[in-house]
Length: 180
Image 1: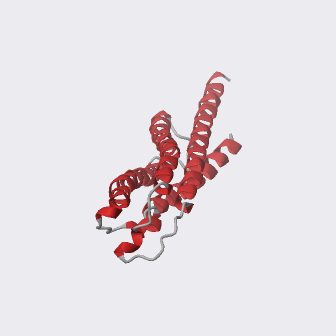
Image 2 (image 1 turned 135 degrees about the vertical axis):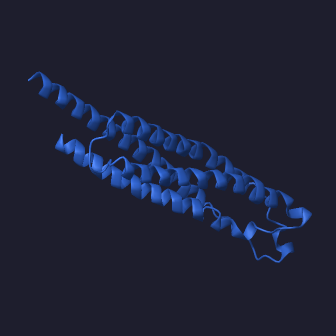
Image 3 (image 1 turned 90 degrees about the horizontal axis):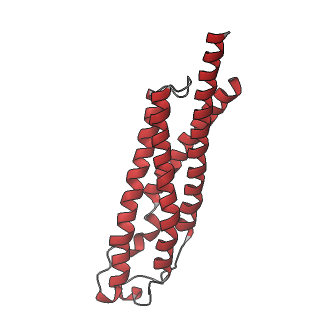
């Protein structure tokens, strides 16, 4: 039981660290694309629409789920997950939160490659007409997002597995005490 509880504490710290990195990534996400903001010419309309509509709406969703991750972190402290085995309510509540976060990260893993493909297919030949220098395509943000959200899925599911094991071990220990 002690090993499982130590794993629970460790996974909680790993989850908190991952949630913070996901939050920071959601704030950073549009930074690499700041040069695409404010384009006005009709020739650059596809770039403007990609930035202002497609990327911004994705970034807004990314940000709100990152906020949800931070709220989940706060709830872990309220439910005293770092100091005790989760009861059934805490287990179900945290399980729903962790599965929701993992599900969103799965959505990101499916959607980011589509965004990257759209980005790579944009025509930047008329970008200079708006006073910009040669625009250099950068896919580092997309790659970083894929790696981060894959890690987030693994951490969320691993943390949930440890919480379930901790709860089950505790309940089985109580049953053994009652019987013997």
